Length: 150
Image (cartoon, rainbow, N blue to C red; front, side, top):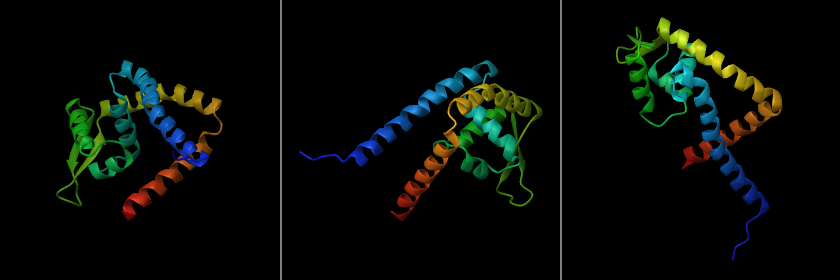
């Protein structure tokens, strides 16, 4: 029988908690965004687009955490809802620039305002979040570097 080191147990427990945290956070955010008629993914895309616009799909995809191919379908859906518009890029005929419509900007602002109380409450109750974020960012970068070397 092999023995598991305490460091290994800690890493496995940590990974489990991170995996469990994502659905819990998404459920809390789903409640916040539901009255706006937005899913978590839609709200995140609109708020990110609000920050980056005009931006290519590739530029937006780099900031969204989504499955491969999903950002394109997501933007098509948001475009169909009248929240996002595509315009040809003046620099690259193959690319489109994405931006929010007036209604999309209003939805993004509403999503940001709806999310604010939850974010504020979590931030105030857990002063260590900034430090934890840096640890998580470092872990992610380390794991991505290992993957890139493979």
